[in-house]
Length: 452
Image (cartoon, rainbow, N blue to C red; front, side, top):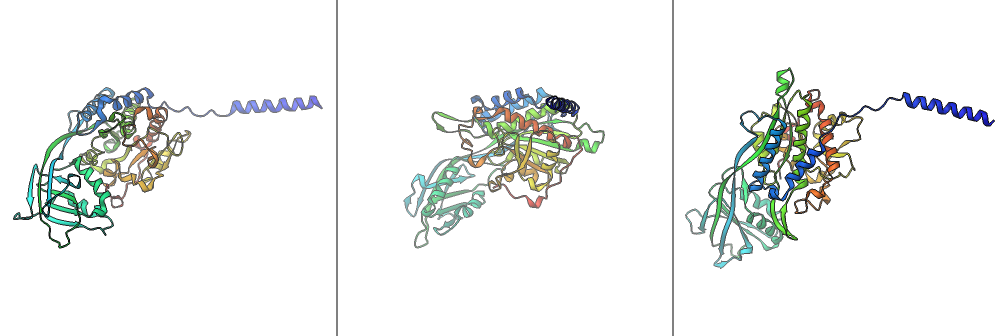
């Protein structure tokens, strides 16, 4: 009995061993992006000497020069029409300097007044030949900013009286206005003064406004590099696949424990690093049928002006897809080896990417935070409005991210191994589109809203 059992067990073990030996081995995955490049680039972009990479400050210029050097090292080419990698454009920065307001004969406390101005000198009153328009925001208005926001376009001189019932909203607006603003075009010679004060009972408003401001053009730069398409089909070779991230951040902000540099490690040194690592990856592969365009955008944080300018330099009909990469430095809510795609339902972009990841542990998920309106809040939205299947890939748990837009968004807070895995997954998932074997559906332009 025992001998028979031994023979049966031996026989079963033998068959099992043979079966195991005959089982096909899983296909070996191609090498991913360089972990060394990922760490080197993200550390360089988040170093204190970059000063937070604000677009209008020296740190922004330094970051652009660093990225240009990376594109040259990799062996990218400038985009058509440029001699180098820096795609320069001008915006206009306005900053209030002084403001004094008298309302119905009484001086308004400085903390209760703010100005947006396209004029270097402001001096007007109700007695002017063309007096400023007076707008009253009463206590009963449910959304005072809905009234005020259009007036900041500076199409005419305007004095806005905001009832003290809206003090909290006024204080937010005033803090924003005192920082100054950046506009894509030179502002008109007008100003908008906002005062926290109730409307006079008799409806009569007399006022005197004196203010100064600086209005100056500022040169900004996207950093753009190209791998020309290798397809023998010239039309396909001319089609573009864009990989992008924004390299700008907030610069220096209010100090916390002596630290005033908002290094922007996750936002968006992580995405910009991905662009560099992907450029290096695809350059080595030499299998791109379509033209690959790698872009580090300026001015995302101050209005998306970099992507807006870029979109005017390319034919959107020739852009097959856009991989915009934003905040991939931490593990997503779905766990390691995952990321989400904004606007997932707007095209089959995400489904095509997932097809190329079969046999890997990585998966892309739809955006889990629809209430955050993320599809419209990054640089993908500009080209998406023009019909391009342009989506943002991210891992950030933004509703609970306490480091967002703070001095604590440091490189030490990133999970570099997971970040490298995400970039590698993007590289592998893009192979079908890059090779011209997959083409995502176009996005209906009328379905895309405006950037808030």
